[in-house]
Structure formats: C-alpha cells, structure tokens
Length: 605
Image (cartoon, rainbow, N blue to C red):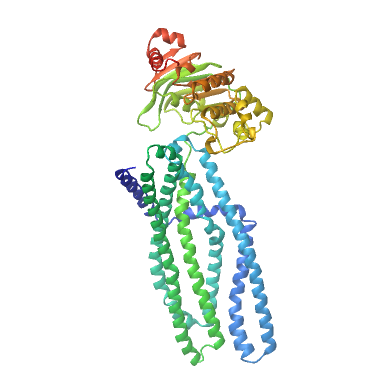
C-alpha cells in the first residue's frame, strides 16, 4: 500500500472516530447492556448483593467499635472485661467479612463470566443470521474484533464493576450518615472540597470517555489489517511486498499503542486526583479536629473513628471513578456490539412463508432485475425455466450475472424486481431455512474446516453415520486418497485444508454435498482450478452428484457443460441465448464464438 493510500485509510479512520466520540454518554444503552444480568436475578445476583451488604455492614461497624467503644469506654474507663469482649467481637466480624468476601469474589466472577458467555453467544448467533450484504461491506477482522475484543473489554465491568458499584454506594451513604452523626461541624468542614473535586472530575471523565472510544476504533483497524495480512500472505510474498506491509502494520500498531497510552494516562490521572483531595481532607481533619478536641466538642475516640471513616469515604469515591471508567469503556464497546445486534437481515421470512421440505427442483425466473448496490444492475429482466431434474449450464463472460443467479436461487439476496418461483411457488413464500436445506453449493474455492476428514464430509448432515460418510466418499472417488492419509478419515486437516490438494478438497466438497442429498445443486466454477487428470475424476464424481436432481452449473471450461440439458448464455445481466450444446452451435451466436475461442486457445478443452 503506497503512502497516498495509507493517508486515505487514516483520514477515513479518524472520521469514524470523530463521528463516535461526539455522542453523549448513553445511559439507555447501558441499561440495555445490564439487561443481560436478568437471567441471574434469582441466584448469582442476589447472592452477590447479600455478601456485599454483609461486608459493607461489617466495615461500617468496626470503626465505631474501635474508636468510640474501645477508646472512650473500655480503655478510658479501664473496663477490661468490655475490652476483651470488644476484641473478640471485632475479630469475629473480620472473620465474617473474610468469608463473605470469598463468596462475593467467587459469585461475582461466575456472574460476570456467565454474562460474557451469553453476550458473545447472542452476538455470534445473530451474525450467523445476517444476510450476505452485511458481510459484503465489512471485513472479517472488524467482525472478529466485535465478537472477541469488544466483549472481552466488558469482562471487568460485569465481574466486579456492577457489584462494586452497589458496595461503594452503600458504603458512601453509610459513611456520610455516620460522619454527620459523630460531628456535623467536622463533616461539613471536610465536605467543602467536594464541589471542586466534582467539577474537575467531570471534565476528566469526558476526556477519558473519548479516549476509550478511540481505542476501540484503533483496535478494529488493527484487527482488520491483521486478518487481511494473514489471509493474503501468499500474495504479499509473491509480489515481494513484505517490507511495505510491515511498515503499514507498524504505523497502525503505533497508532493503536498511542491511543492506549493516551487513554491510560488520562485514566491514571483520576486516582491521584482523588488521593490529593483525600490528603487535603486529612489536613482539615487534623487541624479542625485538634481544635474541637481542645474545646471538648469531640472525644479522642470520636476523632479516631472519624479518621477511619474519612479514609473509607475517599475510598469508594476513588473506586466509583474507576467504575465510571469501566462504564465508559463499556459504552464504547457496547455501542459497537449493539450496532451489529441491531443490524437486520436483508433476507427474511415473510409472514405467510411456509416450510416446504419436498421440493421437486423446478425453478422459474420471471423478468428478474437485481442490483447489489442499488445503482448498477447485475441482472436486467432475466427470464428462464429450469425443469425438475434438468442440468442447466450458465455461460458468459465475467460479470455477466451467472453467480448472481446462483445467489438469488439460494436467497442470499432478494430480487430488486421480478419474481422467482420454486415448484410454481414464489420463493419468498418458502422459509429460508427449508429452502436452503434442500440446496447445496460447490464453489471453486472449496472451504475446508479445521477438524477431521470425517467431520468435514459430515458437515452438511451432522446425523450421518460413519458408514454413510464413507459411502458418499466412495461414490465420488474420494475414498482412495483418504485411505492413503496417515489417519484415514480421522486425519486432522489444517485450517482451510492446506494439507490437501485442490482436487482433493474438491472431492471432499462433492462427498459433503452428496451426503447432504440436496434437491437442487449449484456448481460455481467447481472444476476451474484443477488439472485435466483430476478433472476426469471430478467428472465421474459429478455424474453421481447430478443424478436425479436439478443442477445449475457455472463454468468457464465449456468441455464440462456440453452434456447439459440446457445452456443459458448471459451477457451484461441479460439472457442472449438458450438451448442445448448442439442447438447453440448450429445457431452460431455468442456461445458458438465462446466455444471457438476456447478451442483455439486450448484445443484439449
């Protein structure tokens, strides 16, 4: 990527950040985020709250026992029996607090992990249902960062932030109440500095919120580039662009580092600020407290208890700031998560759609118009009929509309105008699930999942037995090469099946398709990337696949489609010619010219 392209990416990136950080804090969105706690309202959440109430109550009681009762009563009056009782009571309360804290941490972590699990499951399940248009406009890396990084960033908020928020609020209310009961004048003198603290902290929080939102955006760009670089590493090496790619990555990585550093620095300013405020409050306590003791307005025990409570007063304020920072990070992540969750599929079932599980395979296109972007049509008034059990080939130059027809048959997209029928039923009146369950697609770039050979063949029919899997592999000619592998059908294939050749991956795809037993089969350039010898094996496998089912074949190698029942020639989204091979050759139109051109370039075709 050259410097000009790099600057364009940067400009687009910063525009997105500015667009996000101008939004105010959205409490409605945070309420929506916290709704994921609802399933735990009857177990983990109340148990966690109970432990919080116990530990907070213990913390509020102990300073009074130490200051007022121990110093002013037991020690001042030399009542050693009372002193012993107080020591036992204080130790017992610490033990209760220790036990309650252990269960609080255990239940809070369990609660947080459950919520993260539910949220990630919800997001992934929703993304699986989204239409192809959604994936057309987003990189795999940007989707990955939402499901992983953005949800991970919420972990601390749910494992500690929510419960700590309640604990700190209870502690703060309890401390203020006790302080005023001990000495209203001393409490008021210390509280004078609070308005200054809130004024400064408000501006700090605004900057912190913007910084964490910028971090989320930088991470998305970094992950997108990483995903693209890893997937395209062969192309990068083929064109010797490793140095340029590393340079561009270093720039993105540096920007990501700087965003984290900036956010962390602003975040780190809050706690020292609270500690400085605490120091000022302590100075006021010592000076004014000493004055009140001299005038016998407060006792030594009250002063000591007051000092304990003053430390406890600033502690929740400091933590509330941290919780607020967690909320800021949570909002930055949640608005990106909910952006995906709020995305609606473009292809949905109509209210009158019915499940049809016995399609015969008749397909009709009636004046179909289709556009991917709403500007340029990929199909312009296309009409044709494919009868049950027919093998139909779609032929044409790149961009003629062949793959668009396949995408519409499977309802990966919906038509812009016109109508598609399956067995005389409008395709929109058939549920998407029942329609796709009866259609299989074999692509040029066969996708092999990580796992065993057996698991990959069984993918389209999870309930198939081992015998059925092996039978499907034998039918398409894949059994031979599978047996030669070290572990046979239990051989673990790497991501995308890199240990297999192109032809072997294609045979696995055919076995997977045959096992799924679809009513309609779409072959999209299924033999384009294989050699002639492998193609002969593939052709034998195709005879098994095409038997007793409707098939649509998209191929540039015209030798693979000569025996098709019908050939549809497309050009710029329109049907130019229809007929079988011999009819179209006699017609001497576009198909004839394509055959002649391919024969001259490759006589073996």
